[in-house]
Image 1: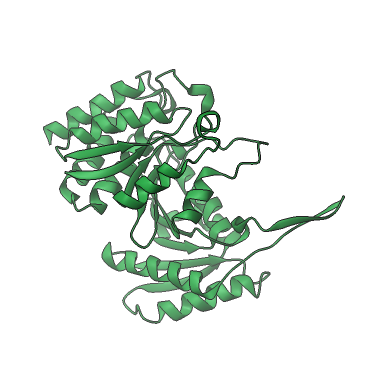
Image 2 (image 1 turned 90 degrees about the vertical axis):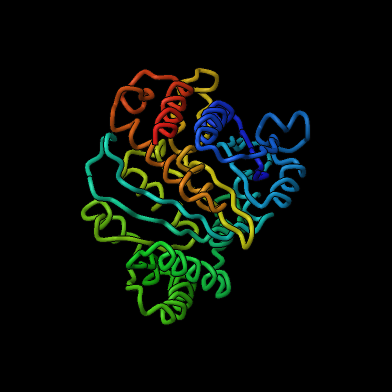
Length: 334
């Protein structure tokens, strides 16, 4: 029995997390879900969108499955996602982007993994108003964080039998900050002679990805570029609705879809749970249930490829739960 924190989130979050639970349960892996609430609805009850009990639960269980959470606009509250990463030191965001048969895309051979540094860069939130007409934001890049994310990327490449790591920066312009990121990554790359290493500027990387994404494997990037390129990569394989993700700390992992909470779809039972179910597949692999993880992933791909039970964004009319039940049926058949 695994003790895992479940954060349903808000918007479509509760609906897709219930759907994901149905699909996970079909694998036979026994999980004790410790459900804790976070998001905009908690402001009224707890005075914050991220109650301390959420952090306590994750620290205790070390693994969490998280639905999307709305960041309140204009309320003074910091993004829950950013705060989670900071409080739990979730230094690495890993976002796979892989072609899936049955999903419309301009590409048929994409298999990328984006490794994004998660704790610094412009996302450190250090900014100020210089005067009424000028604002300043400080970009922080440190050697320690850069070496840590580079090592994570190369270790992942070795573990998953990947062939190449590409470091992505704008070091021709940000010579000191991005230059430091490259310097740190080169140092780490020297210890992994079995993995091909290359460097691209972020603007060129974006062009290359839309022209020939099949040439790339693992990309390692500072925070801002990683955020942008991971969404671009999701677009190559069908969009955010099919894009899983995970944030890693030293001994904590929070699994979540890349997409947002889509408040306009709340309560309609029509949101696509694919990204969260695929995130759950990554979670099962992380806790040592590789066979169950593969069954869950293959079940999703089988349902989508058949094209009979699809949510509206994939061209069908199935409900969120109908899709999840179809995935669960495929898991049981395997």
